[in-house]
Amino acid sequence: MSNSYKLYELLSEAKANNPTVVLEIIKKFEPKIKKSLRQTSVQNREDLRQELVTKFIEVLYSYDININK
Image (cartoon, rainbow, N blue to C red; front, side):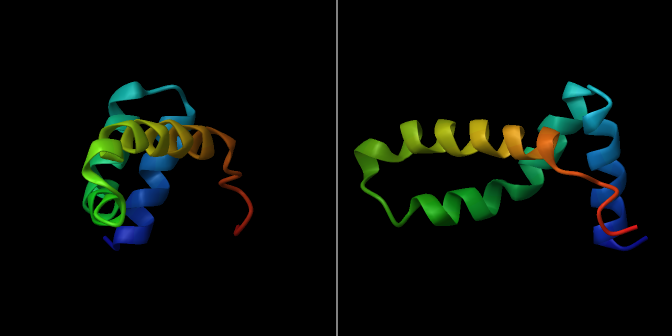
């Protein structure tokens, strides 16, 4: 199974209000989030991380999964 197909399935489940799946998706993107945070000062990283995760969740729920079908 390809990664994009698995992500599509996870996104479908997340949009069905499954918070466990939302956490799983966030964990998949955690390395990218951490890498991006290295570009900012240490004292701001945790606040920025929280903002990024909040925005990430908003995008997950607002993304139209039927756009590419």
